[in-house]
Image 1 (cartoon, rainbow, N blue to C red):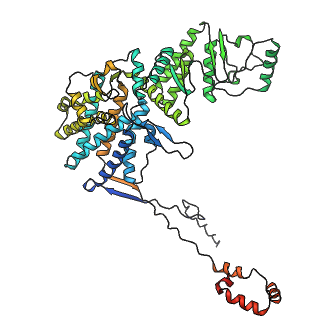
Image 2 (image 1 turned 135 degrees about the vertical axis):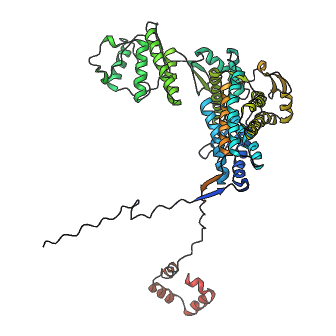
Image 3 (image 1 turned 90 degrees about the vertical axis):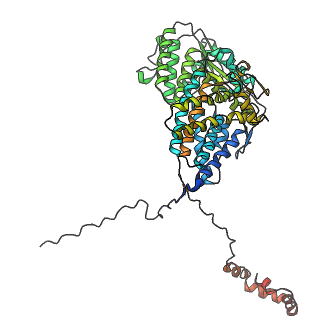
Length: 547
């Protein structure tokens, strides 16, 4: 009878190496909302961040100094930049900061401005909402009332909006830049030269240009050498320009230049090489202006039909693209082909001032683009105050009394931005709100820059409709999430190890006493009389001899 060999023993595979210790588990802390204890901690974080970035709101808003570990500090007046730097020690308060941060970040991503207003409005909704939750109201119905009111207010806002006129572009940009009309006029001039759909870029410098930007890549020495020789001999007027962009973007930009000039791109993928290329692949231009970092190509218009066809294709790609960065690249290509790119070059005495200026101009430019897209409404927070007067009619369409309370919460919160603008200007916010709402003229409001009440439309105090809409929508979304949260889960805070003073080992003490050989000791004793040795030993303590 044949004996069967034993089957090999298989061991289960461990999720970690047996030579390494298993991963340390991450413990969590659960904070239940007994007596609104967790909600109040979250609200403390919201209040702190709203108070921090609220100082920048309005024409008389102040700056915030941000520490920079690797350079000079940042001094900014931009709420979105400040918001990124906020990190609190208390984990629950920090969760509140992260929740409300979503309102500002989303508004800034879509509209390019309005981060501070969005945070202040979200704080108002949360503060008023927590008051009614403490009275025992149902948070789910309150949140639904806030959500429905936000949708209705957006519809009312669109009715209040109108298209921006050319002479108002400078006003919108100036208001967003903190009432700096030098910035507003510069942006208005740039858009006048390139058109409303043109591209405006911001770089370091002191001038505005209308040019075709080309980013450089590499040129082979074999191709560059004959061009230089012919240029020096006067045989041929030639210049080598490095290819734009890199990768797939480089191919697209080269195709755009070929369409503009009527030339053909010589590349291996198309089955063309320089050895086989002739005059038929060359394009033409009336004038070419080349500097060390830019190239302007001017054609005679013979390729206009091909250029228009190319632009139509690119615009279709913009409409079908959802990624913001991809849309920006496509719009830049369209502007290059249409000849509409303006470069605003910003100059300053110091790096700190330069960063602050660039942030202000970026906000102003983004606000202007938003105004061109969806129009403008009365600025200074007064459009939100006018929307608060529409809430009573909106309440009639809500389902129950608790949803109506949610609408009342929104009505009170809409006055928070106006109050803060007045506070930063040194005026009582409640008085300002009461006086503005006492007038039925929707254009009437408080001009914090001049400290007076007037027709804000005539004074050029305008806000982009898109910015106000995003503030209402995103503040409501954050407040709804906040008020319906009942448990908070955070990581357990690790205890820091107590540092203790290291003791000197005994072995080191013993080795120190053995540093001198015995023979040397004996020789020393021979040179010194015994009586002197005795006297020396009496003067020195035993501990000193041991050391």
